[in-house]
Length: 280
Image 1 (cartoon, rainbow, N blue to C red):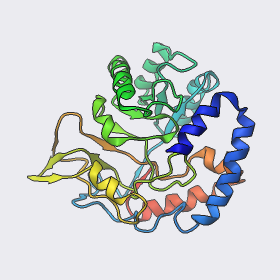
Image 2 (image 1 turned 60 degrees about the horizontal axis):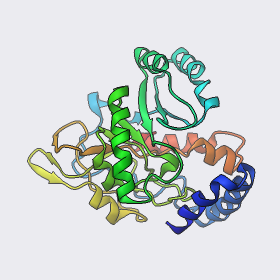
Image 3 (image 1 turned 135 degrees about the horizontal axis):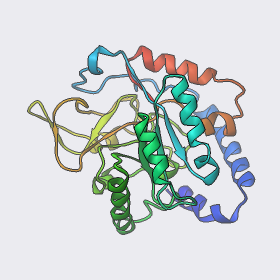
Image 4 (image 1 turned 90 degrees about the horizontal axis):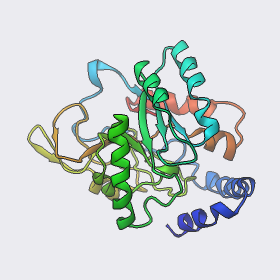
């Protein structure tokens, strides 16, 4: 927590290249230290309690998402959409409501009409969303406004920061701000599972299933959190599904570690698919 706050305090005053050089040095050290827990965390392949499998007998799930974090990224959205359509894919684009750009309604409508999803990515993307509970409540009201205006049901916090029990303030169906294992993030605690899970109390076939409390208890362990059924059951208001990313982020592979190929992606994807998990 202290490192995270220090990093985002100095961030506006330190050039990107300097920050990246520091992160590379730290990541190289951590990569050796966590060689037995990244990119694959043993035990994270255990299906959650009551897991019924994927709908229609599918063997695993594959999800593509894009965080649009600047004007240059915004200008590439249409081209990326066309590329994915030509390959038969549909993905989710998460836009920052009050960042350095404004999202044209025409672009959002174009994405949705072509089968893509629009989600909300933080509020300002400044690393300060979870600095205090009072601040988060204030920002949650604004985030909910954009969720309604955009017709969005999904959220992802900036920099993969997360405080899952606070997100009940958001009017969302799912969050995607966590990961199974990634010790190179500013907030490095993973949820330890390659499956989606409920956050908050939910009623599933007559049984109460815990969400965030079991996640807290299993962070930094190899035991997957207890979770409910994603496709069945009735949730209380403001409960939501957590979708952890399970494939390393592109920034980790290609900027931090300067990998020259996608071998790590392929290896992890094969492993997730073998165990019937979520490849996100």
